[in-house]
Image (cartoon, rainbow, N blue to C red; front, side, top):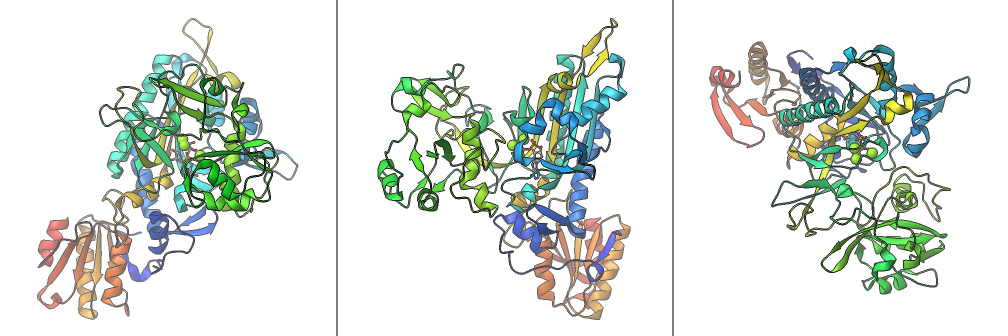
Amino acid sequence: MAQVQRMSRLMVKTLRDDPADAETLSHKLLVRAGYVRRNAAGIWSWLPLGMKVLENVSRVVREEMDAIGAQEVLLPALLPKEPYEATGRWDEYGPELFRLKDRKGAEYLLGPTHEEIFTLLVKDQCTSYKDLPVMLYQIQTKYRDEARPRSGILRGREFQMKDSYSFDTTDEGLAESYALHRQAYIRIFDRLGLRHKIVSAVSGAMGGSASEEFLAPAAAGEDTFAYCPSCDYAANTEAVTFPGTGEPADASAHGPVEVLDTPDTPTIETLAAFLDVPASATLKNLLVKVDGEIVAVGVPGDREVDLGKLEDHLAPAAVELVTAEDFAGRPDLVRGYVGPQGLEKVRYLADPRIAAGTAWVTGANQEGKHARNVVVGRDFEVDEYLDVVVVEEGDPCPTCGAGLKLDRAIEIGHIFQLGRKYADALQLDVLGQNGKPVRVTMGSYGVGVSRAVAALAEQTADEQGLCWPAEVAPADVHVVAAGKAAQTELALSVAEQLGQAGLRVLVDDRAGVSPGVKFTDAELIGVPKILVAGRRTAEGVVELKDRRTGEREELPVAEAVARLA
Ligand code: ATP
Ligand code: MG
Ligand code: MG
Ligand code: MG
């Protein structure tokens, strides 16, 4: 795009109506404003305006990664299976991994994240402690066969990630690389204009120890985090651990866990009666057994389940309610914390069947597979673990005891101290100072580059449409020719002057499009400043409008240009 982009030549088709399948604001607006276009579930094309924003986000990420001394590379997305077998992730990743075969039958995957391949790269390139520390990054297309790719580019099956990896010989070195990334991430999200919170996280499929997430508070977020209003404690609800959880609690030894027992397949009425709720109730958590397997209803981002909607699943399936015995002798299923009243809260966690079971109600249906009678392990593999009884608002802060608050957010970044897990699996050593081999310790760090675009849209959009912060906006000024030839002439001339002053300008010079439509489109597209050549064109007066505040002012062209430049 030149500095001045004419709308008459820009490939953009704005839509008045929300796409039928769109649930989130960013999904609706990015499609309606012509930034992205859906090709298939979780697979998106970036159109010219969207490309600008994506590039702006990438540029900020690059600048801040370069600033901490990380070096940019580009590794393939199509990867051989062997390194992932060596680390166990070929299996551990489960159904989220896209696997494929070449013409000779050799197996490959589409990279969901690249720890293995970077480890091998460094193994090949770095032989001595003198070659370390090293930090490498790429901005690259990632593939994950997400169970619920339903929020537009917030959760793609193909998406852009900045992933980086640090390699150190000492734990202190790793801590330093981690701290550098943490600082860089704060700068990246500040510059992008994304409100964010840093929270403790669980390492999940990545492995390793210390891990923090960068969360952008937004209603559309699929993560819930707990934070303390009195101290600086903040954690993803998946990662909240209460004092007293060092030892797994045995729920059966602590009296009534909230579990239910019924001899027969429950109907919705018996279920409701057991739970002492109306049949139309929305539940936070419910554990049932389907064909003898425990499954959980209620998952992160979708924890509330309409009891009525369960009816379809209950009737034909061999559903039993979970009993206390199911938890007896299974400390791996249950963790509680002990407070003044004894066992105060029980969380069911880390059970693969429970994790997989979540697909029973949500993922399967969302994907149109119409699950009925789905058996965990047969129809779904284990992919990740999660706990299904969550922290609740008002639970005591593990640090200071004050009542915790909860909020929804979008995960925009995640940093891990991996330690030696990958180096052990792939034997990454360098020669140490004393001539002996030293095992390398690693960190891995991700930013959702394409997701950040959607997260920004979520946080900044208003009733009229998108409303970009200056750093990422597709242009600095949107000039609207609101009238006939004279207005268009003035608009183009102002656009030219602004372009020469170094600004990125979008000018709506479309013929045969009414001023009303042009104004609506300008609001929808969301460039921070809108300049209108309208009714006072003959006097050389234009209107300057701030997209966010709506403040407008009439002023002579020269002044308007000076103001913006
Ligand atoms: P989520 O919990 O949302 O599934 P994740 O924890 O699986 O994300 P990571 O493995 O930590 O993701 O990847 C690093 C970053 O990549 C995430 O913080 C997020 O910003 C981004 N990301 C992950 N999955 C997707 C996706 N499906 N679409 C877009 N961005 C994604
Ligand atoms: Mg994920
Ligand atoms: Mg996550
Ligand atoms: Mg993560």
